[in-house]
Structure formats: structure tokens, C-alpha cells
Image (cartoon, rainbow, N blue to C red; front, side, top):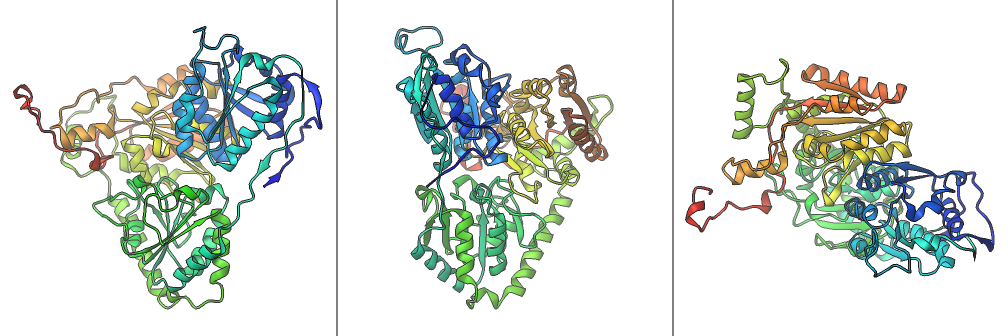
Length: 606
């Protein structure tokens, strides 16, 4: 473990000095390189907030505290630094729980600062009082509760250190009266782990397995992105001539233009990656926990190779062998482990060298076949979706326009994506199908809600990413249901000059759950229909631009226009795309069963 100085130009006070707790708190933020925070102002931390600006810290006011948590998440994932949020004690803090849970499952170093009821009022049932530690205990790696004003710098520094070392959110809980007074404090220097490649024995065992492999496959996971290890993953893949598949919702963990790239595993992933994975005799799971949802059968294929040797590499030893049976577990940094394995394989005779030309043809054939299928997969093919398509042919229901097939829209959006783009995806049917189409050339480009799967994630997350990387084009994807949970943050974009392009798939339904009603409940649609106003018009009312797209040939040009407004005019644009009610494959086919009704009055509902 090493100590680090703040890397920007701000000066941090040195040595023990007299100061207020607020000053000690803010100086520790500066020492950790904090320049941006997200939240809603509150009296609980106003003394510290009063000196944010002279310390070089911008507090970006959000519309809702859940948004502040997602923004901090996006900021951290785009920058590789901490994301920080703060809120008023009680309801301001409790509003952030969902966002912290999402950050937890994304392994994002977010620090949530939770000012608390004053120490003399705790337990009396006063205004905005609640016990703030239990509500976050399931979703934080460390909870620092300041027990005395003189320790505020100590606990603040520890929360920032632990967020990085534990790879997840931490909570800093501060009684509101502890910001005041006079203390003597020394500002701690940040401590960061120097992660190594893993143990010598396990690396040697892994190299021996790979040397004997006939058909090795690499899964490049989120840990590769977090470790800035894409180039090292490429070097290992090229030494093995191994196909590389992205772990679920980490489509940015390997460049899509590379001849060994095959696309993502998991729900609505790449058939090429799944067919190649099925042939593997040795799998290198590099920087991935092999989560269950990312390895479920898909497209009618149970592709996981049950007889393959699995080498799993993860910086968290608790993930090794947790989901899948493994042959070798390496607790190490994904980047450093890739380097160590590549070095061990240099100069060795590899079994896979003898058939590399044949495997290269197989990889290319599967890639081409999948891309051709995507080109020809213009609409969903189940009976319900075909009925929807026929209904749309019979009746135009808005201004003479067409409801567009979601897959065609996603393909056109993919083609129009600018270089260096960042894309966030929400939860929902069309957003899930987007997993088949999104591809990237560099890491820290794709942001998804991961295993927590909450709606309203994508737009505020992309706002945070844009703050961290203002030079990069920023696009969020959301269905109309999820958009309804986050559209208010359009005001944050406009007020604080954070231009983002929001693509809204307007299909007038909660699509993912509606698919279950189609497949399991006789098309009895309960609470799934959404008749909405024009989101483009709502966006314009909030001060953003709004574009309605109802012709396929307009999809690409509309996205390019919105991005031009974002990058050259500093404008947020709501791109409202009118889509049919077609439904993709069910989100969790394994989680439901055909109903059995016991009471006579419900017999018709089977």
C-alpha cells in the first residue's frame, strides 16, 4: 500500500493545525482529488458546503437524490476516480439507497456522505431523524461513523481509501453538530493498494493449463476496464490466438474492431460469443465474477462448456469459484495477471498454435454469421409481436408517422454512433436487446445498471459520466417507463450546462414484464400499458431540445444532429423514437411458471 498526494493544483494543509471540523472534512476531500459532488443542499452540512467553492469543489444540485447517486456512479466509472454524493439527513439520505445498491453491484468507488441528526437529538424522534447506517449496510463495503469532531478527517480519509481498496461504495456518517467547533487535525494522505498479479503457484498452474489448451477462450470482464488492462488483455489474446468475449454488460472491455472480438455473453448477447464459448476447453475469466445472470442460457443455447477448465482471475478472492466451478483461482489485478500470464507463455510451445489458422477461420465465420443475422433480424418473430406488426399496418395512430421496429432502430443507432462515445443503458425490453448491438473501441464507454437492475438508472448515470469526461459524446438509452423515473434530471442538465443526448424508446408499455404476461398469463395485461405525453415536448418545456423520430431513415441523422448540438452548442436533446410494441425474449424465462388456479372463480385465468 502506498500513500499518494493530491494530483491537481490545489494545496492541502500540511501537519497538525487548528481548524474547524468542516475545514478538516473539506481539506480531506481536496486531498482525495474531489472536484465535483452531486446532491441537494441541506442545513445538515451547510457549514461545510459554505467552503466547497473556495476549496475548488463544485456541488452539482440534482432534482432527486437517487439521481445524485447514479451521477456519482457514472462519474466514477467514466473517470476511474471516486464519485461523491451528499444529502440532507433523513429523507435526503434515504432517497439515495437504490442508487448506492446499483453502485455496489457495479463495484463502483462511490462515497456517500450522510450527515445525521445531531448527537443531542438522537433517539428523540426529532425532525428528519432516522438510523442511517442500517439502511446502507447491505450495499456498502465500509461504513465510517464519525464518533468525535476531532476524528472527522480520519474517518473521511478512510472512507475514500476503502472505496478504492474494496472496489465499492462506502458511507461517511457525520452527526450534524460535529461540523462545528475547533479541533486540531492532520489531513491524512490517500492510501492506494498496489495490486499484484496473483500468487506465483496459481499463475504457473494457469499457464500450464493454457499451454495445453486446444481451444482457449477469454472472457474480458469489468475488472479489465477498472484496471485499465484492455491492452494487456489484447496481448494475452494475441499470444493464444484466442477469441475474446465480453462479460455481460461490459461490451467496452475489448475493442470491437479487433479480429478476436466476438461480442458479449449473457442476456441478448452475441450468438458468436456463445457458440465459440461452447467449444472452449480452457476459459480465462479475466476480471469477472462470472455472475449467474451473465452466463444463463440464451437464444436457445446452453452454451457454458461444462467440461472446460476454468481459470478465474478476480481482485476479490471471495468471487473465486463462487458461481462456477473453477480449476485455478487467481486473486489479482486483471491487468497485472494478464501481463504475468503472457510472460509465462512467451517462448513456450502451445498446443493451440498448431490449429490457430483453423480457429481463426471459425472465429471469423461465427462473427460474420452473427452480424448477418443481426442485419436480417428486422423485427421480433413471436406470435404476439407479429400481431402487433399487423395491427400497426392496419392503423396509423399518430400524425401519419410509423411505429418503428426496435431492432431496426438499434442497428441504425449503432451505425450512427460517434467515435469515443459513452452509452448508458437502462432496464427494459428494448434496452436489453441493445446488448446485441452496442460495441465500443475503448474502455469506460458502457454503463449499465448491472445486477441490481433498477429503472431510472441510465440518464442520471450518463450525466455523471459527462461531468467526468466532458470531451466525450454522452448518450443514454431508456424506455418510456424508465424514462418517467429520471426525466426530471433534464433540468439538471439545463441548469448546470451538462449536455447529454437521451434516446427514449417510446413504445407505450412496460415491455419486459409485459412479455411475461404474453408468455405465461394469456395476454391479460395488468398495469403494463403506458399512454404517455410527448417526451420531446416535455424536454423542450424543461429547456432542452426535443426531436421525434418516426421514420427509420431519420434515426441516424437525428442522433448525429443531437450529438452535434451536445458537443458544439452545449445542448441536451431528448430523442424520442416511436417504436412498436414488439417484445424481445423474456427477461427471466427461468423465473416464472404457468399458473395453476385452485379457486373456481379464477379458473379462467390460467
